[in-house]
Length: 143
Image (cartoon, rainbow, N blue to C red; front, side):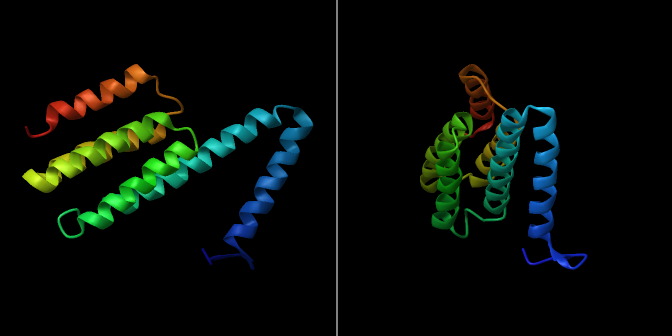
């Protein structure tokens, strides 16, 4: 991003703001927990950006590019221990490979991008909740 915010780049403004915020929190304790929360928020933002790019990619027009972008979500989730997101992305990828043979991409994409967005927004999902999300998608998918 190269935007300017009152003579400074947006990025430098962000860094200064975060530095001041962390200094204030350090004086009052709890910085380790807050830093973990901040890190989680940055990872969620990255995953959300990747999901938005995926949503803007047409599977029918460019299936390879779509699958590469989906794999990027899965790899990012694995790298940052977002296991529910990684598992959902993995099942999504397998479903899209079946779509290559049988068609019906729109309903599969719509269903899976919805639950991926939900999973990215949650702090931690238990395996049971992840399985429930996947089951809700399976009900909506064409046979």
